[in-house]
Image 1 (cartoon, rainbow, N blue to C red):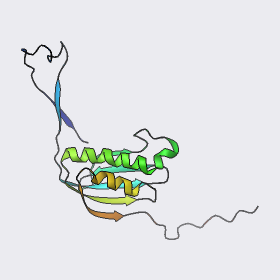
Image 2 (spheres, one colour):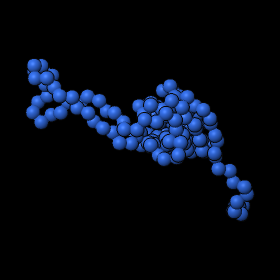
Image 3 (tube, helix red, strand yellow):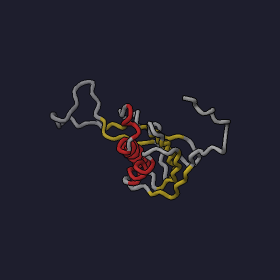
Image 4 (cartoon, helix red, strand yellow):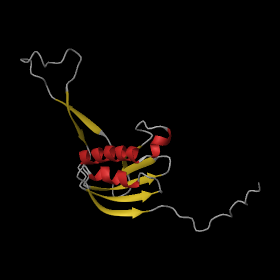
Length: 149
């Protein structure tokens, strides 16, 4: 999400109940340094996992997440539910940066393609374009010989 700046507010001494103890600091807000209005959402949806990366228009990575990094393990990483949780997290971070619109680039044939986009749009971010960049082989190397049983 980039660098964040913690701002602290001085506490009045007249309030004994809300005054932090010695050595404690009261944190009030967490403000991001960058303000970005548009970006690109890259989705890599495989059968085993769903990885999502959000970058600016130049392609620089701002933040990323995956179903595995959220705590889903094994076969649960490839589910649409796990993908929607990843899209929800990325949408929350993007909304905190002030993103209003985004392009989407989808790779892979996994079940998490659409749930990520729906969860991302739920944060009030408009999708301007969706591009499918799934790699398709053009008759690459020679196939293995058939197995004889």
